[in-house]
Amino acid sequence: MASPEIWLEVLSLTKALFDAVKLGEDVIESYRRHREEKDTIQESRRVSVALSTYSEKEVKAIFSRLEQCRDRFIKQGGGADRASCVCSVLNEVKKGNGGQLPRIDDWGNIYRQLGCGAKD
Image (cartoon, rainbow, N blue to C red; front, side, top):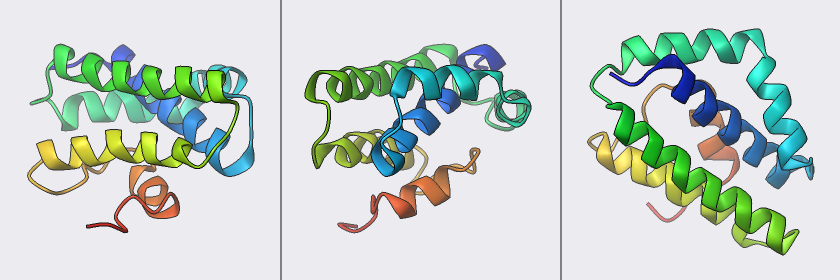
């Protein structure tokens, strides 16, 4: 079972990347803010239990992919492929979950707003 701490990192970075794509917010500042949010912390605890089949290693791999998106965002400063990077991570999680995006935080809304399923 993956720890609430690694899930908090994943949830916070996902939200920060979404904020950067949709609102043009600074990824680092948004990430720090989301890591402190009570509801994000609570959700990380819930997800850790609800998705207990995910190992620490699997969730760290998701986080690593999100970090790669963050690094690209910082280097590029903008561009159309920001959303596609986040979508590629969410689609990978969806595929690994039997074709269904897990009920994690606001991922369904993020997925829809970024148009991740447009090519499905």
